[in-house]
Image (cartoon, rainbow, N blue to C red; front, top):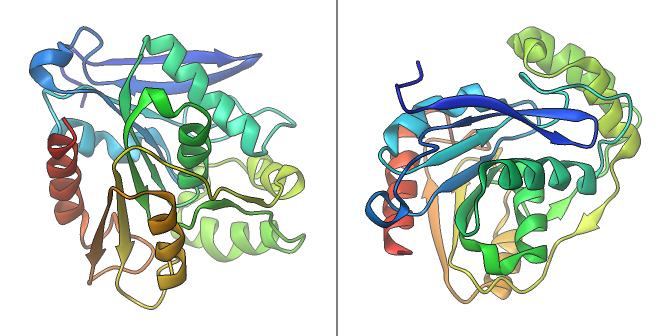
Amino acid sequence: MLGERQYSGWARNGDVRIHYYDSSPSGNQETDGMPLVLCPGLSETAEEYLDLLQALLPRRTILLSFRGRGGSDTPMHGYDLDDHIGDLEAIIAETGLSTFHLMGNSRGVAYAVGYALRQPAKVRSLIVGDYPPEHRSMSETWPRSYIFDYLIPSGRNRLIREQAVYGIQRDSTQVKLDGNLAMPLMVARGGLSDSMLSEADVGRYRAMSKLLVERVYEHSGHAITGSDRSALYEDIAAFLRSCE
C-alpha cells in the first residue's frame, strides 16, 4: 500500500505510457539520500518491488514497469534495447532526476547498464542482479515455450502481455554491453546452478569497473529476489549508503 507521500503515475515515451511508482516526489535528497531507480526483469512489474520501496524509506525510490508489463501500455512494435532505455529515460525526465542510483534485475540489467554507459554522469552507482552485461536476442521458439511452460503455469501471464513476449522475440538484437563504468558497481548473483551469471561474466564486470563489490546469495539461483530477498535488500541499502 502506498503511503501518504507516495505517488503512482505515467510518463510518455512517444505514444507509449510507462507506469511508475515514486516513493517520495517531494523528498529531500540531502537528508534522505540520493534516489534509486529500479529496472525490473523480463516479466516483472513495478508492483513486485513495492516492498523494496518501503524498505528504503526515507530514501526516494522509483519503480517502473516497462512497455507491455504491469500498468504500462503495450505497443505493437518497439521492444529492442533502445526502446526500453527510452522508457527509462522517460521516467527519469518525468520525475526530474539529475543524479541517482540505478539498479536492474535479470533482463532489466541490460536496460540499466545500457543507460549507464550512455549517461555515466547521471548514475551515482549501479546494481546488477544476476545477468551478464549484454542484451540478448531470442530464438523463434522462445515465445511459445516462455508463455506456455513458464508464464501460464506460474500465473505470471497476468504481468506481461503475450504481445510483448512476441515483440521482444521479434525486435530484440544481440548487443554486448562491455564498456567502462566509472561509478561504483554492485554485482548480485545467485550461488546455485541456475544462476545466469557465470564466473566469466563476473570477470567481464570486473573489467568494466574498478569499484566493484560482489554479493553471492547461496540459497538462490537466478531468482535472487526469492529466498534471499531480505538479505538482498539489506545489501542494497548498505551499498547505497556506502556510495554517498
